[in-house]
Figure 1 (cartoon, helix red, strand yellow):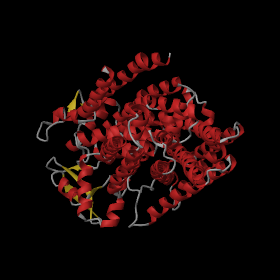
Figure 2 (figure 1 turned 120 degrees about the horizontal axis):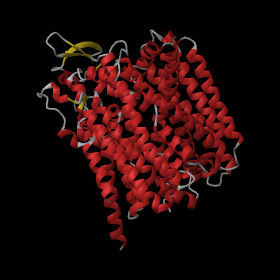
Figure 3 (figure 1 turned 180 degrees about the vertical axis):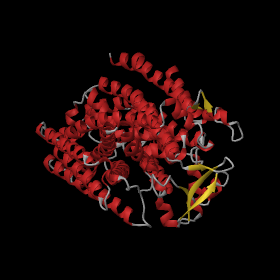
Figure 4 (figure 1 turned 90 degrees about the vertical axis):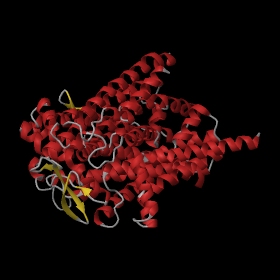
Length: 69
Length: 558
């Protein structure tokens, strides 16, 4: 259940409405479009990809595999 | 279409492509030599696929020209926002195990071959539901095959140039694909998919590396990307199409819809064990998403720098080229939303293409021009290999869908309804006939679309793929009910699917053909399309009708 919730959170935050939290305002300074030189939207996507990947690997090791055994 | 520099790669593409196609035909013959009698072997390779072949064939079926041409094309057009669409892939990966393993188990126990076998045996509906599920399979497979054949034509015209390069490429892709499916069935399809899957994963990453290298390495790449127009670096993108809500529904239904389409469903049946699907799920979720995020999506972003869609003007604002009333006009950043609302369409850089549909060519243009520049003869070879990987992406999706369509029409319609007593031998021959007929139909649609100004059902690759996925998404409510809930009724399932499909049809070009392109209904659905994914709208109505009729049915019975 925890893994499901974390994955759902990653879907909502990564490519979903959570994007509004980091999307620069149209009037914001140009620097706000980047973080560490990378487009902030792209960096946001990479972070949530990491979360999704961690959830899938955890589910595989802790739920799927034991249920087969 | 850019054909001015088609001979840059010399004769190398001819040799590589000929070798590749001959190798595929060889695998087709190998599959034929390993065949055993019976439908289960032709359609599911005897249900014995291990994790390596399973994961590669599932990936290759999922990968299509939409991934190799459409996704970078969309990032090139819309900006970084579309790169986040890659986050649907881990969800698809999780579904391979969560849905796929249940489908595999039930399928093995009862000897199911098509999605309709499982769904109809659960609800006890031999005709109506079977026809509907088969229709969804048809509506998913045909557009997908059409798109792949079109992609074959695009690649051929980029590689070889000449007046009829598009037609020759499209015909060649169709013919070779059709032949190896007809000869070897699922075994050939899966093994060619395994080869193609490996090729195109490497191709995706290499393409991303080429785009980054062409701009002088990672630091220089992101520095130049950081100077792109504000709309390219923020949500909702250049044309304002990708709001977070729309992107969210697209990711959810893109992932789920593409995992329960007939070709993937049959791959779940064909897997040997739960372990095969578990490993496939992890490889898919981790590996494929990385190929998107670090591969093809970077090609789209780099493409915006190398071939700008917006030029900076004297006052620092950007200026776009928009096609309005058949003419290209320059439009400032501030005027762009208004022009687009009036029906204007943004245009790519002239070196990429001349029309609004040519954004999809950015991948081939970047590879063909910049890899040889960077690496000399080795770059030529790599560019050719990646372009062949794009061809592989198109063929691997086309073969899986043609093969699945053959199973669906033969088993669900021909032997399920028209001739229930048909022998296995006659069913297999009908299946091969379906493959030939569907290939010719798809090829015909590509040519008609290309030669006609008024009839163009294809458009850009991604929108067409999303329409196909929207149709297959209408199987989601019944699939979840059959596998997990087991509370729905047959009437509810039938009515829900019909309602969902009607909603999706309202979003297709059909509505404009029936009511006229400036009707109020067309306007309403166009506005809805801006808010949410088409498949999502259909599934909402589908679930509501399915639930309502199932509850009413239960109360009436009790």
